[in-house]
Length: 273
Image 1 (tube, rainbow, N blue to C red):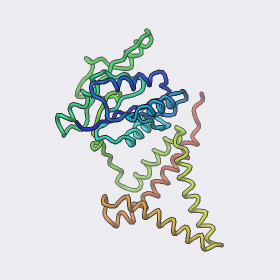
Image 2: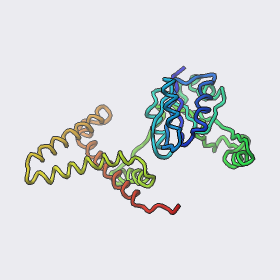
Image 3: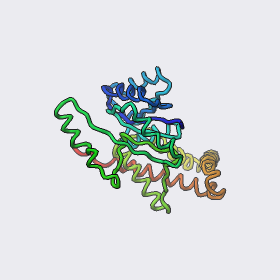
Image 4: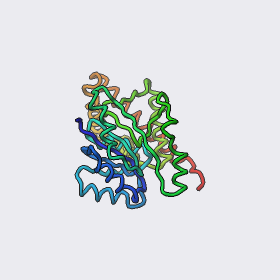
């Protein structure tokens, strides 16, 4: 069997995180690791996660403030297995869940994605009624149109592919939208502050170079190190000229797009309440 990582995203799940971990670790197939991304909990969720991680080397806690997409991507990046099974906060998986959802990968190496199902449970009349609204019944599912939930899905890491935009304008607009979403959500502020500081430093060295020529030498060295670092990322993936010239240039476009989008998102008035 190929190694498998179970990932989950949680926020303010102090009351349920223990049950989730216990259900995963009492299954008929045990994961090689569990990566849980905390989306910025204000209760004891992250503290409890770190305590469990300290006691069990298979468990890893990741702090990833933001929405579920941010947390899920952070958990995938932190995982090491070729197969990733995904569930969610508030879930208790069935004992056979991991075994059954990963079995198709072992049976057919060509399998890339396996979708599972989940059933809502509740102890109060409100929870049961909410479950009726939130989740379909099995007999309501049309396999041709079924969109799996991330509460129960598994995939090969190698199956995750993404096609970037094909020209500079659409590339810029796409990443500006990503930055706008981060700004609107008030997440990853430290990342954007660090990114902005890099360009502020570059502009400062450029202006300082008029009275002090040594500043231009420092700026030139910084630009060369930046370009070399970006070109190294493209080595073996694109041609030499593209790595040396296009990749560093696109990184600047990428950074400016994210920064401008983030600023616009932060400046957007937040709805009352």
